[in-house]
Length: 416
Image (tube, rainbow, N blue to C red):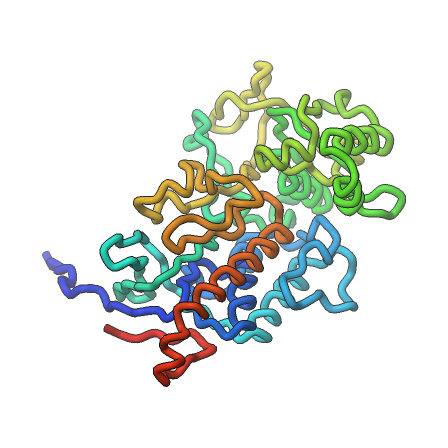
């Protein structure tokens, strides 16, 4: 028997001259670029081995941006003119990698923040992290930017009997293509944008998907007469109250898509934009799934009560035999798991203060990518954060400049 002793050595401590940014997704990149343009140093920590890991590792092959590209641009860099209106997954990743290269953003990859807390005595943030190979680190800085986003952890529902189901069960984050499911009966649990698009992809590869629609939801056409409904909604919201814009969107959806009640899809009482702004539930933008539902290639089923070894027992008492299950049940924030001793974030991992004031907390704490406003909302918050930080940094660095100490554009870490 071999006993392995854990290392008792203290973590390596690193002093950060600038903010510590946790997360290298689009939100974190937007903050870093905005800081770098003003010459402010920073240190970015990323648990994966790449930027934008959600897009690079946890999205399916056919995914595209659901809204026009100019609503998804990060600060200071538009998409290439050659890109289509709705860029593909690969195009968006290329854009983000070009963005990081242009603004010289070099995260510390394979670095997982285990906990972070503010020390009242020193007035500094302490972020404990582990690196690849098990090295323990402690990063210490004046400011902390939480950029881990809304989609950090898979949501896996606790459905009775799921563990005893004999077929394949996978979360949508591991789904790449419907090709392996050709000829199979596949239950898709979830009917958001991912659930709809995965069901459509399964159809395209010869599978027979059963899509679970448990709750009421809004489905609107992605375009009306060749124009983006999202862009139309943004235009109308600049001039009209939200409730009127909701009424217009619902009318357009009925006009283009028809009565969805006949398909087993029911609309909520609350309008689509109000629901997005208050609960973060985005409407589904139809890209062809409804046509497949109408012709019977996608079967809509109600909620699931339990699984047997080969069937899904539905809330109406019927049972559906399926060969595989795909959980299109979304993601959640992981902030409560590692951010300590602050009431800025709620138990759900979102700032308690609503948009547009949820980007700044106390004692140098900032958040980006939690506004439930997509990439455009994150970009707007990133600009606000960078402006605020740069102002504070310049005020605090004036004595250093007068004393003749050097100032650096890049992030500089000093080992203690």
